[in-house]
Length: 94
Image (cartoon, rainbow, N blue to C red; front, side, top):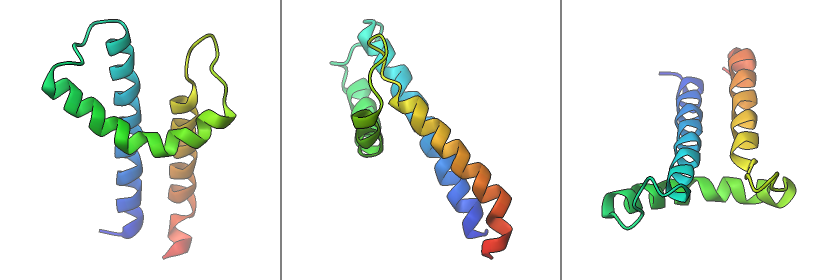
């Protein structure tokens, strides 16, 4: 397997982790999920730990809009752009 394919897979998985983090936070805020449940806490803590280092710098720049954090959306768009660039110019790196 080429290294470009592995990078693309990792970026895709990270993008899905960002989406899961956002959905989990909405469900926890709405009271649908019990964050005291050990499994829910473990999953949300894991997702927070892997996504927060990338989201923190974006949160410093992008303000909350109507109480909604847009940093996951910005990071997802950046990852998508990076994936497109890798797919377009990946053959040149080999």
